[in-house]
Image (tube, rainbow, N blue to C red; front, side, top):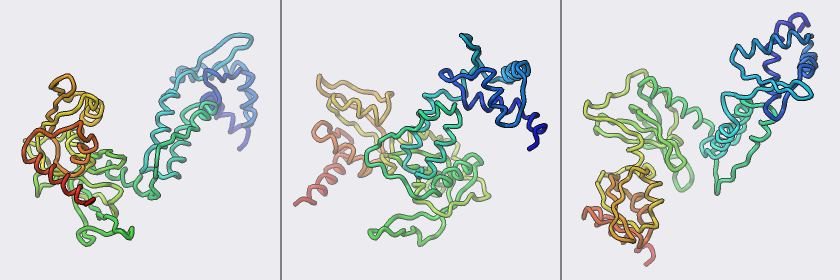
Length: 328
């Protein structure tokens, strides 16, 4: 590119270098800027640099002047602060559904939101025990497609599969397409789930996104919820353990006081805790009764007891009996 053509881009290159090369710990003088612009075959005088800096400030870039032996300039604030970017990088590295390749691409983009020097501080390795990242990059794009369908209130079609003991995909309904009305996405137990409303059953159901294939947005409006039906994704997630559905029941459970954190972690701080004595408390919760709910209760051993209803107590006894029979 000719020098005269590059000259028109001076203020853009100046903005680029200040954003990439400066922060509170790393500054530039006007002489540094003039020398850096020379790399792009752009000549500049000191007065024009001062004028450009003022123009960039009016544009909204937070350029701070610091005077000591020299007059230094740096970009003081950005859309994201460094601790926020670190959180984003950690989230990407910890996400099982994001492939290693896509993780690296996303982190590179996150690094571009700060200075080059601070970007080196984002080269973090968050250790997550037994982390297995997916090799299927299509999940990343499937999630985006499903969000689009929800935003546009459109139905989606897909095939749904599970794995056999030979680790081969086996499609449900003999490979026939599901057509559903999506209402929300949920992140549960390190997996994405699509939550849908079924007009046939007049209830909500869900599907694991990594077990969906051939996802397409259907040019048809999703089924509207009945007038008396409202949907709270947080409430739905609390009731459905690890996204295994079942008949919903109000269950009364007694817990040892040592389990208060586990109960709050599962049901939130709004859960009502009723003190029984110095050692125990009781909660009443609405849950979908399933083997995963019983497994959650079972992990606490003698420190927890289901008090009611009787039907759930009997189901739990049967669950325990079946488990014991595996060892007889």
